[in-house]
Length: 278
Image (tube, rainbow, N blue to C red):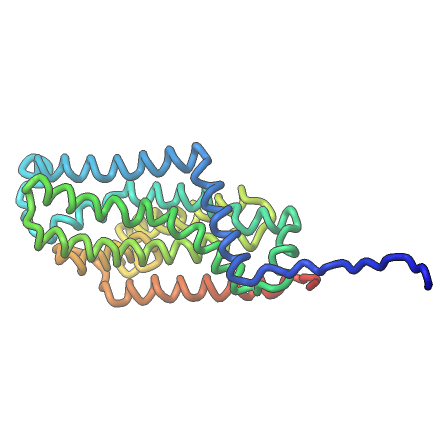
């Protein structure tokens, strides 16, 4: 009979799969953002201002907008409210500017991109955090306005449902544009303040000069350089509102192309980051 020491084996802990890691990144990011007072206040204030002013204009349309037809074209009014532009820019800078920049600064990116998720997975997760928050400003108020108007009996449900469908499409277009551009800017720097400044520069640094120059030299084609003017051109055509100085097909192409280019450049930037895989 022999006596021997007991042997122990260490059980290997299995790595969580891609789906679990992506879900963890998205849920953790959204939970963190919805706890931030600045995000909560910006969302509530933006939605309330847009909906309340739109309904007020609707109730007193004869005073504020003499000659405005109360049909589908009316809903271009809330869609063209510059409050939408300001709060979308604010939300993108508050949330999106830090999504990648903070990871680059803290070197957490190397942990995210270690197996089993890829660069594309990482970007999809970050976009899934930012896009819902931007859509709270870009989509929700434009959907609530015709819904409330129909509840008050100011519009038929047929027109209201058409306006809601168009609002979802237009808001999704603008959400996709700002999500891709914001992630690109956040990936180019280690400081979220620089990315936030870049977001405001893209918005107002293009919109204001384009409007001023188009008037001063009488060349409306310069308005294509402004994402806001491109969005307005598409919205004007969607709701059948009169006016407009630029063609909506080209404006739509510019917004879609800018979205795809920004997303592609962000992916290339992420691929350039060196990661030690485990």
